[in-house]
Amino acid sequence: MKKLLPLLFAFGFTAFSLWAVPVKKGYEISGRIDTSQKGAIKDYKGYIYMRYGNRTDSALVKDNAFQFSGKINHPVSALFMTKNGSFAGSFYLENSEMSVSLSLLKRGERTITFLSGCQGNKTAKTQQELQAFFQSAYGKPDFKAKLNAKLDSLFRTNPKHPFFGETLAELAMEMILDIEDVEKLLAILDRNTQDEDDLKSVQDAVWKSKKMAVGNEFKHFELKDTEGNALGTETFKGKVLLVEFWASWCGPCIEKLPEYKSVYKKHRTGGFEILGVSFDSGPRPWKKTIKKMGLDWPQVIAPGSFDSPEIAHLKVQFVPSNFLIGPDGKILAHNIQPEDLDKKLKELLVKQ
Image (cartoon, rainbow, N blue to C red):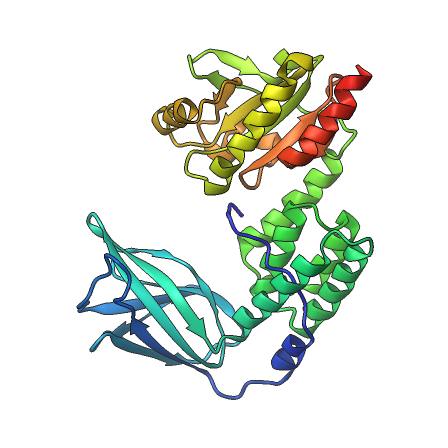
């Protein structure tokens, strides 16, 4: 799963009762085209398409309104779009009465369908509850134990719901849960109804946690730098090296760059180096961002992004992400944040 989504984890027992009651009727969606946003299409005439699973349904828009109805066996990820258009924002289709609002924005020849509002969706309510819990409990001594217990109860309530597979994938990729607990939680879910990408993300995260754990040897790679010359991680042996995976199209990556610049300026002469690994589709946006942001540490580009064969063994699942490698070539940390990196370097570089 190559997503750039915030973690939405918190738990309320209200969600349990919502899913515990069998739903006899199907879903009814009342939709409206929101024309209030700047640049939004005001008088759309045509069909809105709803894609879910391997199906596509359509509804004719009349007076900026449309409706969908039907029945599904279990919740499924869905999205709205126009013909030959693209989308921004998905939701979980479930057997309930929902109201949605869409904003249609023209971008060149394409129409982007934004999901700007969704009410009556139980999964969305659970996501909000999960987020509230996560924000209030994260960092406390018993957080992992409580999180695992909540997830276990929640997953058993509805093991078919693909939202739980997505939740587990996010947690596994961020290495928030112990890997043994991730494997136990995965065993609860009905794999037949989970998204294949989410299942693969969990499996990759399990492999990564075992093979690329802190203390293990980092598996080196070599890519081309901004001048087209080969540059590999072994070049920096003897230094503390941060291998930072990023891209010019990644908003969170760009937001973090000034903080990494500050850390780099402070420690670069003390035995610390950064190697930026770009997942851009080509050199132009990559080099432009390097120049614009004033990034003065070594940079290489992975031509196949996440699927580049040179780094396939690292199983990078999202950006921004990183490995911190010690002078001896062993992994010191995963996905370390700038503030924590600064503290870590103060400890490491004093010892050298």
